[in-house]
View: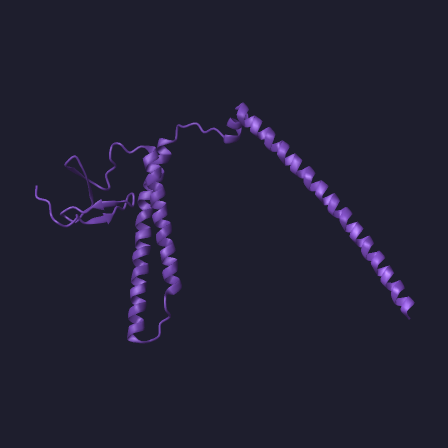
Length: 190
């Protein structure tokens, strides 16, 4: 098989958002051991963790395209009535529409991933983290230390508040004494 000097054409896969080679017919495909499989078929090795990763990538693609749509909307110029202004506006509208269509296309595989992961996890038993933490002595010890530190912090804040209030009273008394001294000095000078 002769290799071409140019690199193979690549495009973003609609299922995972990863770059995949474009086949001679123009469709997307993945080459595995000389066999080409369609991007829409699920390889037999896909497990729940892989599907979750693919779902995260799909959500990231949706979010990035949505942010792009909003940034394009923000910079969309108002129609000026000139041919150039209308052309620029139409080009931006087409780019926005392309992004909206791409976002819409990503929701179908995301729904399929969601359903597949839910089916895989249907029989799993979930354990609440708090219940699990209570059953481990290390977590109990950490929890007790945390409570102790929170209580100590509360006591220190209370002491600081009391000392600040005491200092404020002293400052107020000093101000009163200084005011009285200034008043007596002013009366003695008259």
